[in-house]
Length: 206
Figure 1: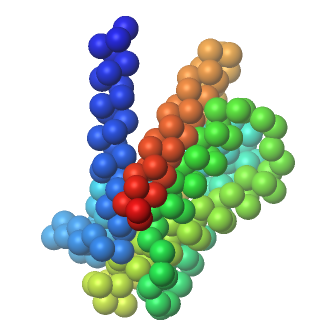
Figure 2 (figure 1 turned 45 degrees about the vertical axis):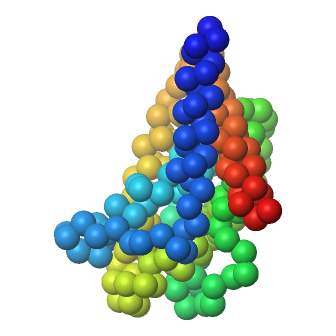
């Protein structure tokens, strides 16, 4: 048991280090397949985007089909709009690490708690998470130029649609009580990762 706990601890610390890089300072991914695929590659190589998107999809699926449909609409849309704002606006005085950690903690805790939430709250979370993460995506992608960056954002939006549709539909389909517990455990791991990321971000600031 002790060895198993040590392995999980090392994995968590390693993930926190991987998430520690500031988005706006990262190099863009070049796949050689065009800007849309570059955006998809950038998204999948950014776990601080993938995990909150998955967390929101888990939460929406736990709250039922209507919440899943709302998340499917609002998360990609808000992400693209936030990305456009990041492309056109100036760089903020703060990095994206703390907002990313906050989204990990909030979404992970809500999934783990499995409390009944109105559909409007899920929609608001989708708008908030999508806008914030999209903004920092836009900051990084504008290095490629306006046209390619816009296509990269479209690629990210398509992948978000696929992820939310797949994960939320899968969670909605779960019927056995123990399967819901598995989803809640996944949420607790997302929250724990956010806590590690927040600690790392505050340590770097000091």
